[in-house]
Image (cartoon, rainbow, N blue to C red; front, side):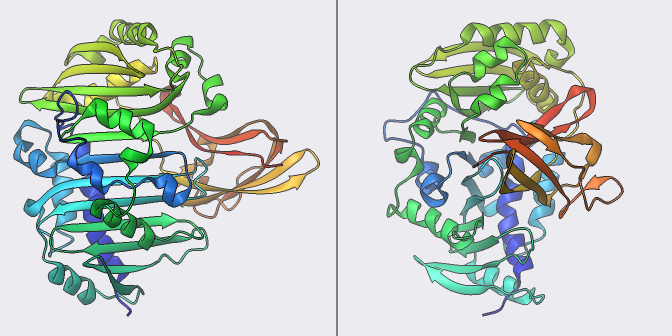
Length: 438
C-alpha cells in the first residue's frame, strides 16, 4: 500500500525531537540498580552489534513525563522546540508521552549505521494511521503488522545512501527504526526493539559488558546516555596532553546521568575501562583543577566537582545551578579535554561521509564522498592520517562541501585516513575515519 513518508517521519520525529529533553540537563539518578534488576528502559534495548555487526554503539533513555513536570526550573527554549515538534503530529499529545528510549550504532566511517526509538505513553494508533494516510504526498511505503503493532515502512530514495525506515504503533508505544545499510532495514531495527521488549530477543544489557557497567553505575534516571567505542591508536596519538591520553588509555565506554534538585542539578559522568586498565583518577583531577584555575568564568555556577574511581570506572560528579545548565555543561566538559572556555563554541557539523577504496601502487586509493548532513566550508575540512597525497574537494558550491562533493586520497598500506573539521579558536573534531583494507 502506498502512503505518505513525510507524515510518518514526522511521527517518528517526535521521538527524535523529544531527545531535546535530554539537552535541558533535567537529570535524576540514584546510586545504582534497584533490588529487582536493571532499570525498566533496558528491556527495549537490543544489541546493535547483533543487528548491524558494529562495535561502536550506545543507548539513551529520557523520562519525558518527569522533565515536563519540572520545566519551570529549566531554560525555556528546549521545551519550545519540543512543543513545536509536537505540533507537527496532531494525533500525538505530548502530555501523554511518558518515556523515550533509544539504541543504535554504526561504523566510524558512517558506511553502516542504524537507530531505534521507543516512545512510551498513551496513543491512538488508529488516529496516527489516519493522519499518515491523510498527508499522502506521493512518497511510497508499505504497511504490515508485527507483534500487535501497526507497521509502516519504506526506503529513502537517494544516490548516496541505502536508508530505510519504519514506524510501529500500538496504544502504549510508538517505535521508530532507521538504518543505512545494504542488507539490514529500518523495519528490522523497529522489530528488533519490539522483540527485545517482549523478551524474544537478547537485550543489550545482557550481551555487552560495557553496557552493564554503565547501566549499573548510572542506575534508574530521568536521563541516561551511554556509548561504547574503540578510540584507536590514531586518535589517542593525536592527543597532545599526556593527562588526556591517560583518560583515553583503555577507555571503551562513557555515560552521563544526573539529578535535578530544584535550584541545583547534579551531573554524573562515567568512564568505563577495560579490565586491566589503570583508572586515571589523578589525571582527571588535575585537568578539572587546571580548568577551574585557568577559566574560572566557566565554573562560575559550578558549586562542586568530585572525581571518584571505582571498579573499572572513573566518575565525575558536578553540582551546578539549574538555570545555567548549558553554559556550565560546556565549560565543565571543556575542562576534561584541557580546553575549558567560558565562551560559546561553534557547533560541530553533523555529516555522513562514505569511503570507497581501490588498490593502488602506493597502498590504497580512497574516494571520500559527502553523503548527507550539513554543508561545510572546504577550508574547514582537512584529510589526514597515513596519507601520501590528496586532492581538493570537487562538486562544491560557493566553497561549501555538500552532499555529492568528494575528494580523493592515497593512503599507505593498512593505514588510517580521517576527515577533520576545524572551527574557531582552535576547536576541532574528527568527522569520520576509515582504514585502508589494502
